[in-house]
Image (cartoon, rainbow, N blue to C red):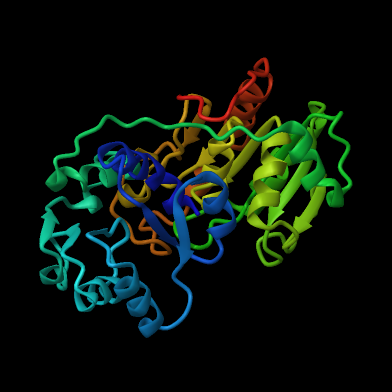
Length: 321
């Protein structure tokens, strides 16, 4: 989800560069319901199924150009075998010989946002655009209808907390999320927890648990109606930023996981990192052992309070931030 959302500015740049082209975007099955709503006028399909199914699709559609924002040997080989004339991808993979248009840039350096890296990939096509991020406005009535099943009273001030990270980077301790929820509840906010059953297992703090109850569009509508969303570096954080809701992101000091590379886009995003030097530790192998514990509940609470108490701003679809 997060990868797709951070690729949207590059997809828009492709549309602008080739206004008469027929654009097709391949996404994962989980992301498809969101992509189909966002990319109006674009052919969106999923990569589910066998290698030969994907090969058949590429041959049938007779694409002139394939761009690989998320390089995988399987998809690169498929486009090569399908005879796609121009195939653009990174030049630093063992299978990069399968591309005939290459961009040489190491994303592991984490010197800029992932969205900027995706835009840079388009340079061999002569496309050099500044990063522009557009929020996606959801009609409040439509959002309300989508989340009726959760039976939440939206006359209250709701803050959503998504404590799971999917294991992509070190996370804040669970007890810290609970402590923060208690402080926010004491400040007059209602708390709703989102995530999988395992991510919300053991959550005994205040609020409503929606464990494994939110499909991607439900989640987008729910976040749109909230005052704030708090989450670690994970897809739902980017989804909340996409629908224009203020977000507080909790990040690790590991360079490749840093908010400099994976932070949410938009003007209403705040990211917090433990007060230690940036490091090159591997996820799950922290040399210090307790980095994430050093980020205090009070610091996150104050950041959340400052964003949640800002006056609401009416957002329309396509608003540039």
